[in-house]
Length: 229
Image 1 (cartoon, rainbow, N blue to C red):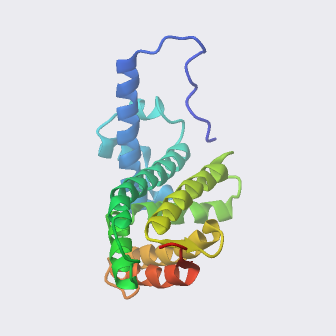
Image 2 (image 1 turned 180 degrees about the vertical axis):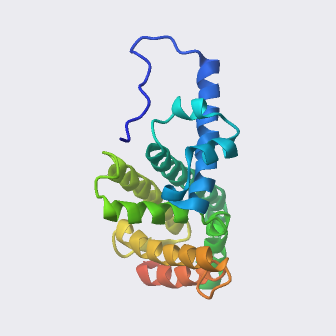
């Protein structure tokens, strides 16, 4: 049900221009799908709505995806990858600032950096709506997720753990427990913030506005000052 479009035969020539156009078409369909699925849900959304939003025909859709369900999972994966790339880029821009600090950072300073690190994502609830939809569907049908999807999520979490550990190290601190366990605690706070932002427009207490303070409180519990800092 979730099989991907068959790849070219081994050794077959692939027109780079055609490949680029097809990738652009696919990306536009994925972006449109994220919007439509967020607004309508998987059951309420139609292929026609996605094609209309993307500006393509049904033919363009079926040349890239075999079903609405396959598109939904691809859109979810696309959102995960996009946010992982955004977080990595944001970390790279923050690292020089953290490394240039002569004195150990205080909680108020760290909270500012944390809020800056998360701010590009705080106002975007599409990924959370898609993830919530997927979780509900998967609970009803455990075979919904294609083979390898859990491994894909674990890989992204591993990449994010490396990013977070670099930032903490640059701030002159180190985790007192495995970073993956600490990240699970941070995920809980972030997910709660995203959920509140999604249902209240970001105005609820405990939403995105004070996320930096709450994550920093937890960070100083789960880390200690590194030797030599």
